[in-house]
Image 1: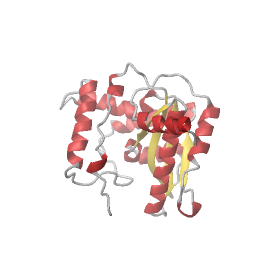
Image 2: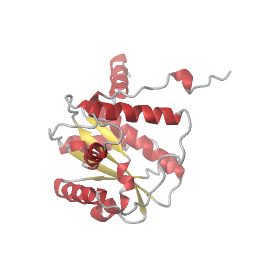
Image 3: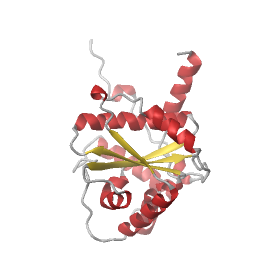
Length: 227
């Protein structure tokens, strides 16, 4: 690999971040297919390739978003599809979580206790933040944690490939909390776990939410160098 190619890869990795407001500019379906082809080069144990991906067309997406917003207003408790976060946060994870939350809602002008503001942001999340491309990822329920690691590699490869092609992205775990609605509207069988969605498109540079740049721990904070 040439120095220029390595620099391009590093730029795609370093510049990728979660975008929460998109321009409506359409994305060429051929490019979406190419990104998926690239993501499929991700490693997986014994080449299982356990990822499952659905690309949502306009009619399917509109139906799904309508159902999700309706579900948001339903006071009935929602059963978790899987546990993404720990039951009790501890340090240093608690401080990191609070910091990114405060920073994001500060940019959005949503104060603590502003339930209407928080609801607006949740609805935007359920609408893929207005991105022109909406994806949904699942994994077979009978697979083990190794396949989840493989799925993570697939997702990251997809996000970096998109960044390299000038597209921004946001992986969205929120859809797992609404998995019953997602499953019904997308005809996903019970044999698959709804893991997350992904929004793809070009970032709206004027949107306050897109000024969020989460801090990263220095290498020394999580690395041990062993003799």
